[in-house]
Length: 422
Image 1 (cartoon, helix red, strand yellow):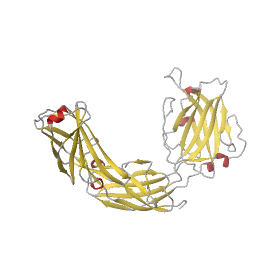
Image 2 (cartoon, rainbow, N blue to C red):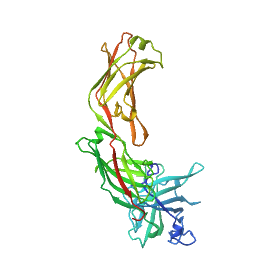
Image 3 (cartoon, rainbow, N blue to C red):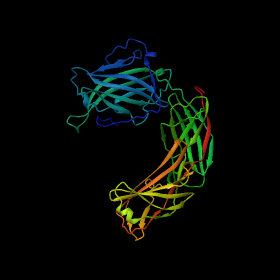
Image 4 (cartoon, helix red, strand yellow):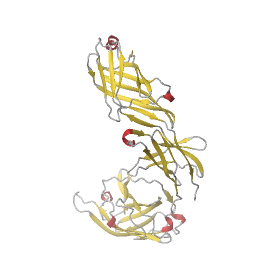
C-alpha cells in the first residue's frame, strides 16, 4: 500500500530502546554512491540518481525493528521536486534478514526548512532479525513521486539505495514476562491478574474483571481502572489502559514498577448501574421560586431512600429561564454509595408539578470525588430544567428509572515484580 504524501500515519511504540550504532559499527562514515557498508556510523547515507537516503536511527521494541530513514533531493537534481515524494510501498524496498512487520509500513512526515519541504522522514517497521549473528539489508529499489498534475501515474526514480547493517545492532530489550494466578472476589465481581511484563521503560499488567453472577460488566457497570500500591504505601497510576478485547483481558501501562519487590495491584471502585424506578416528592414555595432572581437559591424539602442511601434535595438554583435541583446523599462521604448518574447511560429523568406539567430536562451533572486513587464517594447531582414555574406550585415530583451504586470491594492482589534478567 502506498504511503501517499497527504496521508498521516501514527505509530505507537510501547517500548523503544534507541541504539547507538557507533558502538557496533566502526569507520569514518563516508558516503558512497549507492551502497552503505556495515562499517559506517550513523547517519548512514547513500546517494544515487539525484537523491540521498540516510538511515538516522535504529530502534527495537519487544517484537519489532524500527528504522528511521530520511529522503532528500540533492542540489541540481533533475528529478521531481522532493515535496512530491509519495512514500514507499513494500514493492519499492527489498529486505534481507528480516521482513515487514505487517501491511502497515510505518510513519512518514515531511522535513521542513523556512516553511518549505526539504525532505521526508519515514519510520519503517520490520520484524526482529532472523539471524542475530548475521546481517540485514535494506535496499530502496526506486523512489515514488506523485504525478503532477495530480491523478496520474506515480513517477518512479530508479535506485538502488542499499544499506547493510549487522543484526547485532538490533539489540532486544530486557523484557521479563511472568504469569500471575492471583485473584479476588467481592460484590459478585472477580478481579484476576494474568501477567506482569517488566520492560526497561514500563511495566504492563494484564488483568480481567468478570461477573460471577452473569451480568454484563461492560453494560451494567463502569470499571474505572487499576492502580499499584508500592511498598511505601504510595500509589502509582497507569499512564494508559487498553480496555478488554475479545478475550476479556485489559492492559494497564505503568512507569517501571520497582523490580524484585512485592506490590499490591488494586481494582478501583466500580460504579454499578441499578435499573429501578425511584421518586422524590419535593415541597416547593412556588411564589418564591417564580419570583426569584437569577443566581438565587430557593429552599426545597425532599428526602427518599434510593437503594441503600437517603437522598435529599438540598436546594433549587435559579438561572435565566431555568432552574437546577441539587440532590445529595445524607450519609458521610466515605459511607455514601449512591450516585444519580444518567448522562452516559441513557436513564430517564422526568419532573412534573402538581398541576401535571412536565419540565424539559436540560442536563445532568454528577461526579465521583476521591481523596486517593482507591478512596472514592459519590458527589452531588445537579439536574437542570427549563422554566418558568407557576407561582401556585407547591410540589415537584422527580422520577428516575436508574441510579449508580459505588462498590468499593476491596479487590487487591499482591504480586512480585520480577527482577532484571529473571
